Amino acid sequence: MYDWFQTWTNDVFQAAHGNNGSLNTVLSSIGHYSIDAGGDYLGQLAAHLLGQQKYDVTFNPFAAPFRTNGDDLPICMQPRTGVLVNTLYHEGRHAYQASLATLANDEDQDGLVNVIQIAPTFFFQDSKDPRAVCNPLDPDVVQINWQFLGPGNFDAFGAPAANQQGLGHVDWALEMDAYVFAAAPPR
Image (cartoon, rainbow, N blue to C red; front, side):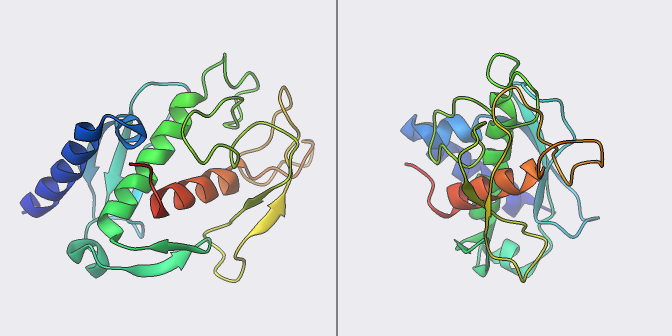
């Protein structure tokens, strides 16, 4: 039933593997993918522990732009041209992000890391430097200037609990990074 999906994703993986560049490295962080029609998402990284080499991704290919690899509305001010391929790159970037969060590269295990080898290299870097982030679930907010606590200080993934310091929302930095990467992946 989804032969078209497997053919298309295989073509994307093969093209990335053929160039042996950064895109191949990012997509190689996907260990397995599956199809699920039960959610209101195009793709999502499976629940995971940080710092693994490979991650599972689930795709929901029922949306019309996904089936035709058409265009969709921008998110986080990033174009989404070729939604199937864009979603594959986006979820691949999430897998890559999580794979970097080893204890050696993310000592506080909050998902913000010290070293990012493949551009963009600043959205989810563990520093106090301000950066643009985006809440993709809020269509009225395009980008927000945001600051984290820096290395060795845990930043909450979502909104921080009352007893936590900082502004939290590591998830917004990860989403911003994935949307920027998917809109203009390296070749």
